[in-house]
Amino acid sequence: MIIYPKRSMVNEIVKMINDAITAKCPNNWIPKVYGLASPVLVLSEDEDNESVFPSVIDHLTGECEYVFVDDDYTCGWYHRLLSKNYAKASGFGDGDRNVELADIIIVCWGRTKETQLTAEQFESTIIIPSIPVQALLVSTNFDQFNVFSQEFKKATYSLPPEMFLFSFRYRVQYPFDRKCR
Image 1 (cartoon, rainbow, N blue to C red):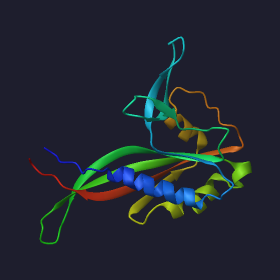
Image 2 (image 1 turned 180 degrees about the vertical axis):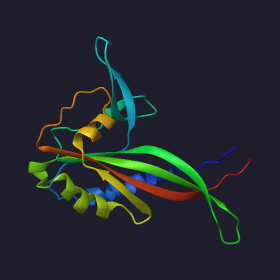
Image 3 (image 1 turned 135 degrees about the horizontal axis):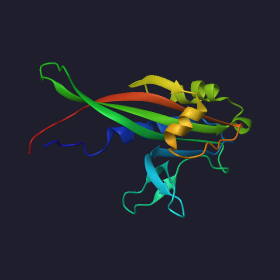
Image 4 (image 1 turned 30 degrees about the vertical axis):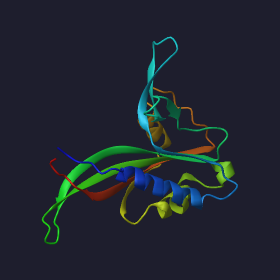
């Protein structure tokens, strides 16, 4: 049986990154900030069509909160856990330790007029400096259409030209204990 840590290391790193990004945003910006989102199946009112949208799910109530573009905000972002891999890392006299590697993306959007930034500038001046050194920077996808279609399955692309959208991939690694009860 695996004993999981009481707190999620992924949620801790997401909170740390969100706090750092928010601190880098100018005071006149109104950011829409979310933690981990999940893909949610959405049926049309006539239930003939279905789409998938990213949402933050309240696991106590089952309510889903939409995490994308909103006219009331200057910019916004959410994270999505892509995968976890497991390995062993050599210890010093203690034997091998179990290590978890989590691949995560941040999906960022913003209004170029209000932020006065392009997607590339937002990534280089706000996002990258906010990623802690213990996280590995992996890649950025600036293809708005591709990012939208990955996040919104079977949905019509509806991002206005004055908006930017990109996803930034990072990886975190941390040890965890596996013990039998």
